[in-house]
Picture (cartoon, rainbow, N blue to C red):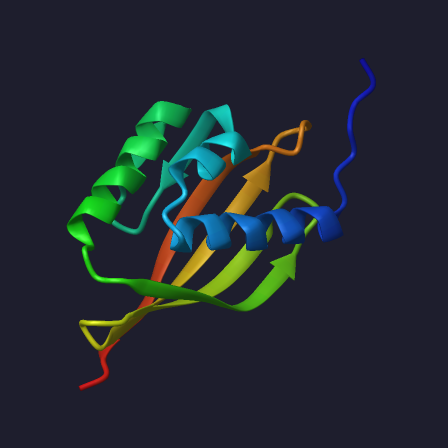
Length: 126
């Protein structure tokens, strides 16, 4: 089988889709985007490996975040090896927001195989 080359335009669109699915809490669509060997690392120095483990982290996040939230991409930075997403998350009912920087990498099949999250600022909008 011939290796698939995924250019940054396609990767950027996949990252936008990822955040759309994340915001709408579409676990099935997220699952379809993830490689079986995906690795998720966050700013608390927690790392989980494997698709089901990553999906479980997201499920817990949804469970623990009952309020609606909006995800807005401030900017996508394209690198040959990764897409860096500067993202603003607003929590509707809590009147708070968070800035996240995610470094998202893909495997040769165009599936997300790594997400490294870095916490920016958090502020209350009250």
